[in-house]
Length: 157
Image (tube, rainbow, N blue to C red; front, side, top):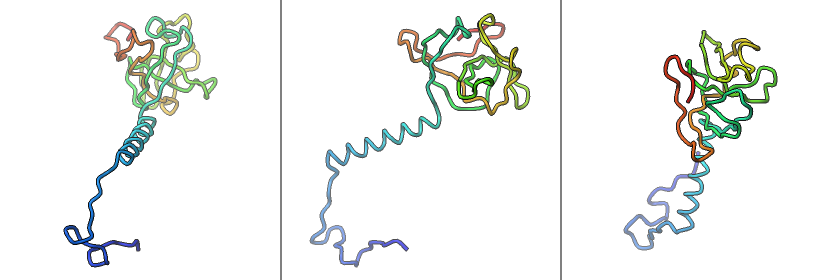
C-alpha cells in the first residue's frame, strides 16, 4: 500500500505554525508547459500524421511537393483522399481518391488516370491498408487550406 500523508503524521496542517505554501516557480511552470507540449505532440501523432506528395497521379488536385495532414482512420467515403499502403510496396504510402466502398474494401483511383496506378491495376484495397484521410494542405503556404470532398460529378479539392 502506498504511503499516505494525512494530518497528524507530524506535518503541520494548513494554518498551523511551520506550514508554508509554495508558489510554482518559473521553472516549474516552464517544465509543466514542456510536458504538456510533449504530451500534446504524442497525442497528435496517434490521431494525425503528415505526408508529402510525390508524382503526378493526383493532378490537378495535388501537386508534387505538397504536404498534407492526414487524420488517422479507416472509415472512408467516396470522394475522400485516402492515404494507404501501396499494395505492391507496403512500406510506401500512396494518396488516392476513394471511388467506392463495398464492405471492408475500397476502390481507389488517381485524379490523373493516365498517370495513376490504382484499383484498376491492383483491385479494391482492404480497409486495413488505409492509414487515413488527407484533410489539410499545409505546404506550400499560399495553397494552405482544407481539402474538400468534390461535389457530385466533379473531382478536385
